[in-house]
Image 1 (cartoon, rainbow, N blue to C red):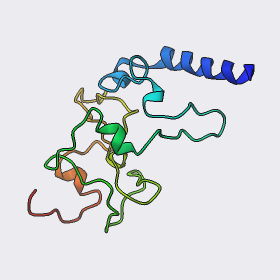
Image 2 (tube, rainbow, N blue to C red; image 1 turned 90 degrees about the horizontal axis):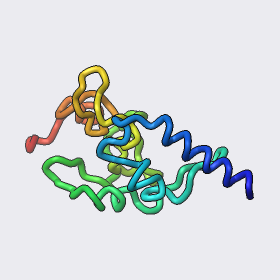
Image 3 (cartoon, rainbow, N blue to C red; image 1 turned 90 degrees about the vertical axis):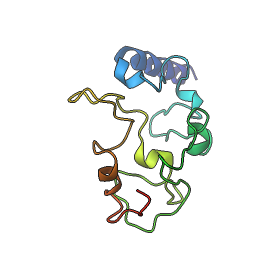
Image 4 (cartoon, rainbow, N blue to C red; image 1 turned 30 degrees about the vertical axis):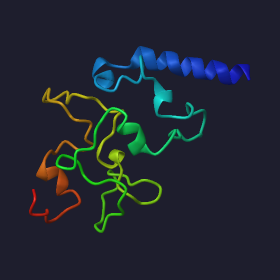
Length: 138
């Protein structure tokens, strides 16, 4: 038990030491929010980092889902989705299909906001990763 506590404390210290300001900007997982806002527990060994609840429920605590700016979530795509845009365990699109909140908030090469997108491309170009033809509303 003492060993497990020591590993958790060491992990927390390492996160504090090596976290960059860019990493924390917008989604400050180190300070006021912490890992446990989204995750049930810290990973120890090969334990998966489990989410507390459905990822959309976590995201909408702070972000309102705006249909005009957001892809529908909770749907099973009819197109082939690239491996780097992961679906949830039921094969549905979720917030983290396109966004990775653990990445940098700012592109170090361009200095521009990443919006936590998993790819550098934005707008329609990002959509073309899955959609060869976009709906006319775009």
